[in-house]
Image (cartoon, rainbow, N blue to C red; front, top):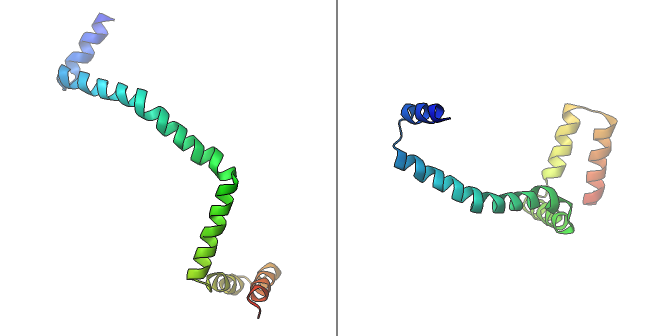
Length: 102
């Protein structure tokens, strides 16, 4: 083990004090930063998408987007029908027209 320690320290270009400072910073991040970030990421990736707040938030975002650009869905349905005149695209366009009251 001593041989490995000597060879790795002699081959590194960083000074020992800089290396120990970096190690101390990494240890501090590992013990203080990553568990908190991991918990937050876990909540937003695994738990939040299945909650009611998430669905309500998505619904609110869709309503806001719809109010900013009310013709977006209609244009998308027309473009879908122009690219492929399938029955499903015709039905989707008809449903969009019905929802608009046309």
